[in-house]
Image (cartoon, rainbow, N blue to C red):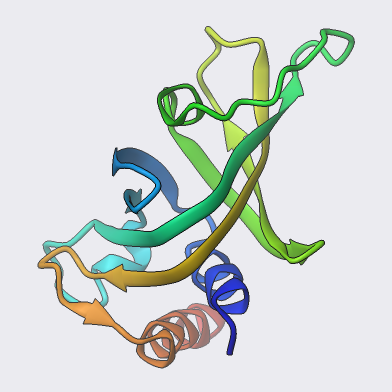
Length: 152
């Protein structure tokens, strides 16, 4: 599996999670993703995951203007991209980059979400205690959650 596919899969698993914090730079960018419904499956006290993007080639946010007739500027500065929490809606691959559709609930901005594009050499995901999860382990946690949810 390529890094692009792994990135898409990890952000797809984190559907409905919120990117609430970031730290680092192009060499190592760590995103904090609040996703209680999956995190608590590892430990009842957990509410988040950490996602490391290693050697980031591209990270841009293409905002959805609010109202729609406003001009939009692509955001490339990490502080601008992550100044408000972004809720993850979906993730897909387009033109060999991952495109994550995100909504934004901060009414102080002139956009209501956008497409976050990511390309990096590698990605890793960690639980709240910084234990690394493989993509298979992470996928199994998600699969089990949705299997149990469907029985409710």
